[in-house]
Amino acid sequence: MADTLTRILQGALACALMGSTALSQAADCDKGKNCLFVIGNSLTRHGPSSAIGWQGEWGMAASAADKDYVAQLLKLLNQDAAGASWAAHKEDGGELERHPALYHVADETSRLARQSALVVVEVGDNVDTGKTPLPMFAQAYSQSLEALKPEAGVLACVSTWWPSAEKDQLIKERCEKAGGVFVDISSIARSPKSIARNERTIAHDGVGAHPGDAGMKAIANKIFTVAGPRPSADKAAQPVKTPGKKQP
Image 1 (cartoon, helix red, strand yellow):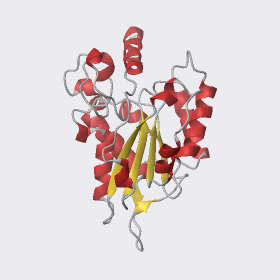
Image 2: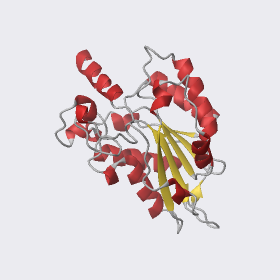
Image 3: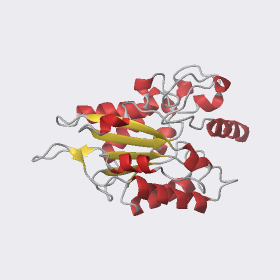
Image 4: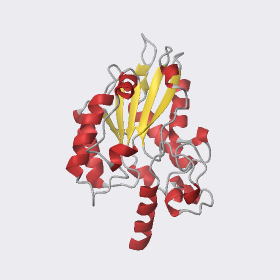
């Protein structure tokens, strides 16, 4: 059991992001559309890697680009936007996990995030606590949240996929201190039906341990429920800052 867990975690660490991409160009977020800004690790986006048998350009391990959690969340937002249109932009958060002491949010990245209606931060799994003291990651995480939190939207911080009580408590505390809402996906991660290898044959243990299509959809639904738009009788639905909002 311990060997299996070690192998899965090693696979997870190998699945770091390989660059950034966007479902819609950042320019779309500047054209009157509500922007869904997402910064994350391999669950958000992983480029092709023959070494691990992954050919996607999207969140690992969805079966297609329109099946990852960002695409699913964007679909929910557009369905519920009361006439408003949403665009999505993804950024690589791998360096925040791997080299937190050196990480800095670029000015243009901060500008786009601050103008966004919903900012989702999904990092933590690839923080190697054997090499990186958690207080070091905590400081970098807080600094990043301050640079990324939207001026008039919602900041949502997602828990780890490979549940870590210590990391998740840190993420929750730092997120709420920054005025954001914590999105706990640990119950989704623990459900066998959420795991990619239980949906289809995947040779690489690390890839297979990521969320499959069902897991991605569940993550999108959870983020939407906790941090998405709320109905308003006198204005178009927009995300509303509710730091104390309880999760279902």
